[in-house]
Length: 172
Image (cartoon, rainbow, N blue to C red; front, top):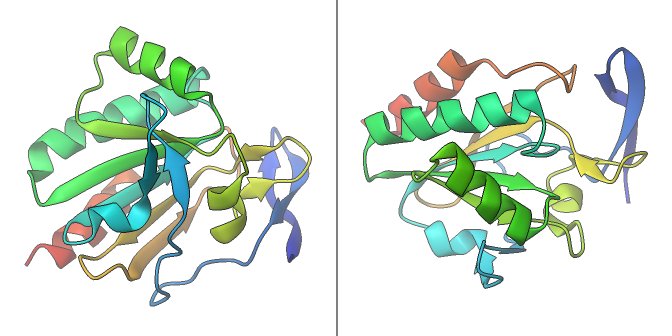
């Protein structure tokens, strides 16, 4: 398994990402995650929609909270052709509780807690913390990654405008 030392930082401290880095034009790896009801969900289940896959360390942190709320608002504006997924290592129970408390109903939260399969397949598993690095993947209707954004400093928000612009190119 590939390791990328210093690929991201947390409060300036370098961290190691495990897994091959996903690049634009690559077929999106199909992994199994758990939804809030403990049901297995494959990323390929969303084929036919444009996907925004937002990997976050934990919904119970301020930046992840803000990011997921923001994507919930964006999802409402983008319409039914777009599905927003937030993937974290949080337990499904915690994700469900957080969504209810935050009023998030347009973003589907999925848990990678069992095996870290998403983290490894997308190259965003932080070795030192067993959390996911803040990253965004935009996947087209055929399952090909068309946009990738890795946030170098994990404690910062992504560039939402660039993500939305990438999605809108696929909706034409």
